Amino acid sequence: VSVQTRYVLGLFSQYLCKTKDDSYCCARSQG
Image (cartoon, rainbow, N blue to C red; front, side, top):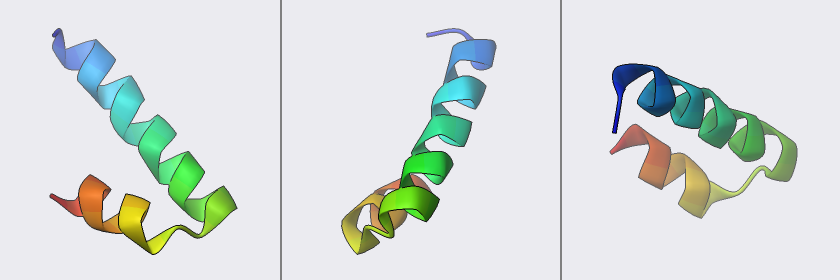
């Protein structure tokens, strides 16, 4: 996976986390 793709996926996961307010998603995105 390229760095750019990982960067986009990171932003997308943060977007989902903010919109859904999903604690599980937040925990996953943080590592």
